[in-house]
Image 1: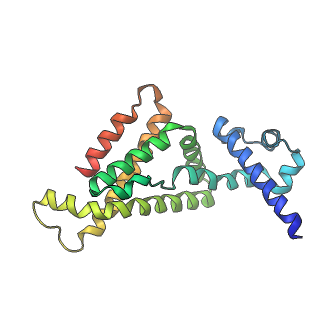
Image 2: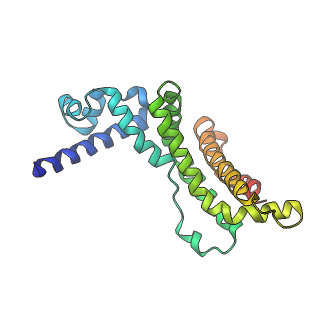
Image 3: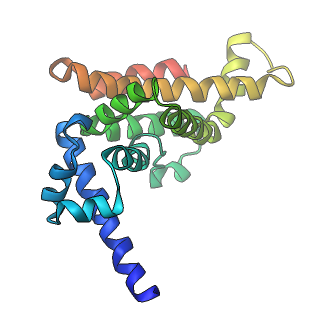
Length: 206
């Protein structure tokens, strides 16, 4: 019945939220039905009602992880910047700062990436999310790519090159953002977001 369905959907979201909190603090290995039930303050059976096995819970949490690590957050000030290079620098800086601020989220992304080696469903979802992340960066890189190619060639960009240049810049931007987050995971003591943003901006915008 509709009146019963809404509370069940809410309970499911609460369980997923609790599962994400367990995973982000302790890793996917710690994601047990018992741990999630304790975090959500529900019974073991309630978790199993919504997710009939641990693997189902692990797969359901992937959407939360991809939302945190592969969905572009566009800063409000981006629209006020006239220079394509400045827009790309601002976007890169914002994403590098966001993902490296709490590296546990990206650590979970890496765990899922490793799981995707053996699990085709997880692999397809991760690859699809990364494709979407690159497409989002491409909107900014489309304005930037031809100008960079023109400067490096010393003249106008040939017709048909801009699409490839934009795709390449978007791919490099995503690699730099995720590389920055990886450094925050594996070497937080020697990691400097300021140095990484500055170096990345110089590499991408020339």
